[in-house]
Image 1 (cartoon, helix red, strand yellow):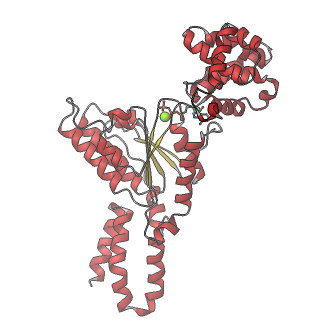
Image 2 (image 1 turned 120 degrees about the vertical axis):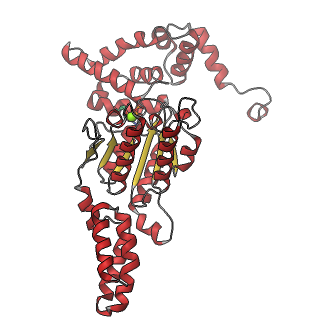
Length: 377
Ligand SMILES: Nc1ncnc2c1ncn2[C@@H]1O[C@H](COP(=O)(O)OP(=O)(O)OP(=O)(O)O)[C@@H](O)[C@H]1O
Ligand SMILES: [Mg+2]
């Protein structure tokens, strides 16, 4: 054992290496030192136990003070770092998504238990879904729930017209993020993880994807890497496989939209009739939470500025939302409202669909088909 040489190496790694490198060196050297200096053995055991528990170490905290990586040309920072991220709105999670998010939170809050049994907690999540359904909000929610800083890649700063420079920027971002307790969010991930067989992509892009794949594979067990995309089809299949888990964010259902609207409207909800809320929720089916929020905000502004009851403003939006909908969709909406218990007259007034039309279909929906178990009974 050459303690002086090891000390120099430790100093080098502490200034230019990663926290993981320092840990590895400590795990190699400290047990040998413990044999030579039994008086230090208990302290050494405690240090080694601390570094394997997965908790941020002192050296990690020092690293967190490092300046953010910048693009060498523009000097723009490649990441936004939020020490204490906040939620812009109170999220309403569809139950399947909430289950996934809670499972992840539990794994990370109890990671010591998993690691002690030799089980790696989930480190990387791929969030997939159309625009405005809550992917970025989910990343923020996880950071808030786990009390970790949120590091968001600034795609505009990272992407250079020179692919080689983009590659270096991404490497710098990954290197920085690997060594902090922050959650790294690679938003618009498809832009950097395009398929490697794309005809326009050559050498450097392939290398870039390889760097990403390796980074996902080697992500430290204490770290969290999130990536979001609304173009999953553009992702290299190898990228999908690398993530520990993929969470799909579909467009919310009418029920989920209804719940989100009551949260968004807060105390205004009390002043709005059920029929208006139900109709809007059904009309918003197939749209994103972001669209719903925009409409509610517009209604709230209009109500305040023009001194009108919010109910009147929201109700006034219904004909516009129905306008231009194909007849088939209008009938579906009428059937949904009728099945929720609204009178035929109300449904007809709101949708313009003849009573006979939706009545017949509502009946067809509720009457069991001939030959089914219910019909036989
Ligand atoms: N589950 C939700 N509950 C309440 N509001 C939501 C929810 N999801 C999204 N929103 C609203 O929509 C806005 C946009 O959501 P977010 O930025 O998370 O979308 P996204 O899926 O990341 O979209 P993009 O693919 O365009 O980046 C949020 O700021 C919020 O107002
Ligand atoms: Mg987003």
